[in-house]
Amino acid sequence: MTARPPVPPFTRETAIEKVRQAEDGWNSRDPEKVALAYTEDSRWRNRAEFVTGRDEIVEFLRRKWARELDYRLIKELWAFDGNRIAVRFAYESHDDSGNWFRSYGNENWEFDENGLMAVRHACINDLPIKEADRKYHWPLGRRPDDHPGLSDLGF
Image 1 (tube, rainbow, N blue to C red):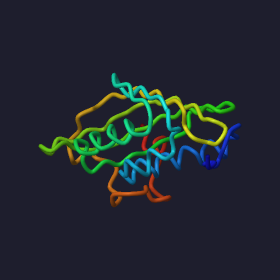
Image 2: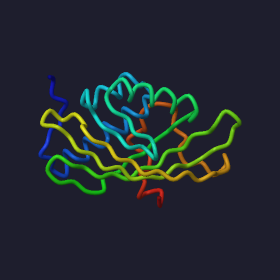
Image 3: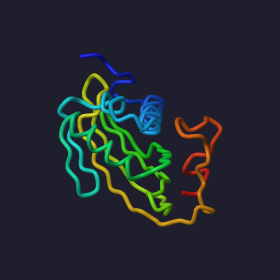
C-alpha cells in the first residue's frame, strides 16, 4: 500500500496540510480521485447515511455532486492528536432549481499508518441563502491561497 503523506502522528503543520489536501480533493469534485484518500474499507457517517469502502464512497460522492451544483468548500483545522484530526467546514452549492445553500459542519477523522482516512464522521446543517449572500466566488476547483478562510469570513 502506498503512503499518502503526511502520515500520523500529526503535528500542527502536518494536520493543517492534511486538511488542505482534503479540501482540495473535495473541491475537485472527482469522486474517484477523492476516494483514493480513504482506506479500501473506510467507514463513514455522513449526516444519516452510512458508507463503507471506496466503491460506496465513489457512489456517494457522485450522488452528492449531481445534486449540490457549483460546490465550493472551505475546511479548517479544529483539533488534532496522534492519528486523529477534527475539522470544521462550510460549503456553498445550489440545487437544480437555483436555490443556494451554505452547509456548515464538523468532521472527525481517523487515519491509518499510511495516512489514509479509515473513519470519517460528519455532522452537517444546511442554511438556505440568497445568491447575493454567497461568499465563495472562485472558479470551480481549488480555493485560491489568498481567498479568506472560515475564520476570516466569520463562519
